[in-house]
Each structure stands twice: as structure tokens, then as C-alpha cells.
Image 1 (cartoon, rainbow, N blue to C red):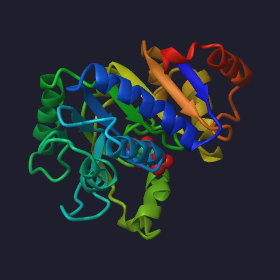
Image 2 (cartoon, protein in one colour; image 1 turned 90 degrees about the vertical axis):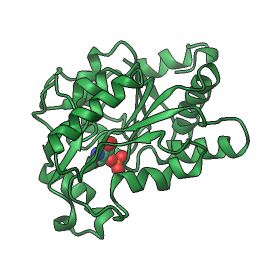
Image 3 (cartoon, rainbow, N blue to C red; image 1 turned 120 degrees about the vertical axis):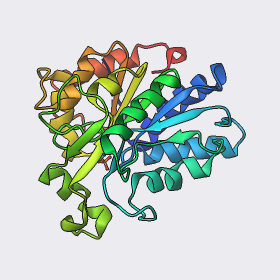
Length: 261
Ligand code: GLP
């Protein structure tokens, strides 16, 4: 696992956008994994800037979302499908239908989860997966206790996650759905490059466990320690509980710039 400590979200976004620009230049039909939440927003803004400047095209790329709430009306602004369209997909040149997400309103949710797994496999798998992390260590919506071998399925959100996400629902925790469909931990682990971003002191404990804790379903993101190519980009506040923070800084400072992340 590579840990990259950067001064702020803007510097993190630059490094991640550099990597995506490099990937799309080498493989214009690359498959991206898109995350919701506030953590990736600076990355999306940077990608839009580069797209508008003519540096990046998504015209041949495809993308898969991580997760979706169950039961939100199609037009609800916080439905993750609408969030992704608003924050990134609708601001760049993805072809129609190129961005897919799990269907949280399917009549047959179990069948829809299996179909989503198949769609990712049919696309050849995800090349670069963007991730945030919940304060309880979840990635996508894989809450503590999630099977480390899980695939796309229905999950129940913890009250902590519903409280954390209430800010997107006018601070009304009761308006946050109880259920979701989410890529499983094994689904996420199948992506070829995992790029997790976290900022702020509220994430410090989760980041400490992710990087330096024991691998455990209690902190689901720790499964990333088993991934051959996982990059964790954090600001100083999110890095504040890392025991080897100075070492991670030395390693990145000594890395040739051409290697990227
Ligand atoms: C949400 C999403 C995750 C996200 C996490 C952190 O519940 N399902 O994909 O990484 O919580 O969100 P934020 O980046 O807003 O802190």
C-alpha cells in the first residue's frame, strides 16, 4: 500500500487526475470506478477542468459506480445515480449509457446485484477505482462486519453512516434510507488500481486502521492491505494518527515524479 500525504484536497486531486489522465491517454477505453461522497469532489472538479481544456476525453471510457441507496425516487437529488451525473458524468463527454450504477429500485434486487457484477466483468473489470472511506472504516457501503469476500448485494446502513450522511438530507437522519446496494469488498478488490482519498480529522482513526491496523471485517477498508496496487492519499489531518507518517512522507519525497501514484 502506498500512502501519500499531501497538504490539501487540491494537491490530492491533482495527483489523482494526473493518474487518470495518464491512464486515459494510454487506454482511451479504460474502465473507471466512481465513488460518491464529498471526498472525490475535488478530483471530479479537476477532471472537468482538464476535459474543458481538451486534455482528457471520456468518450470511449466506461465507468461503474460503487453503490446506491434503496428506495429513493428516481428524481431524488441524493440518489447516487443523480449525484454522479451532477458531479462528474454529466460534465464530461461519456457516451450515453457508459456510466452504470447498481439499481436500488429494481423489483428483483438480488437479480439486479448479480447483473451488476456481470456487467463489470463483461466490461473487463475496473482499471482505476476511486474510493472514499467512512468514519467507521467502510468503503462503498460495506459496513463493519461485511464479509471480506463479499460481492454486490443489499446492505443495511449503520446508524453512524446514516448520521454522517444526514447532511445531504437537510440534516434529517430519518430521511436517509436504511438499505443500500453496494459492490462487495471482493468486487472492489478486483479493480486493478485502488485509489482512496480522505481528508479531515474525522477520518484519522479510520485511516490509521486502514493502513496500519489488523485486517478485519470490523474495519472493512483494511482488506485493501491485500491489494497489490492500492494508493491512499490523505491530508495532514487525516494522516494525524498514522504511526509511520514521517516514513510515508520520506518515501513519496524520494519517488521519481514520472512514476506518479
Ligand atoms: C458514503 C459512501 C462512500 C463514501 C463515504 C464517505 O456513505 N457510500 O462511498 O466513501 O460514505 O463519504 P465522504 O467522502 O462524504 O466523507
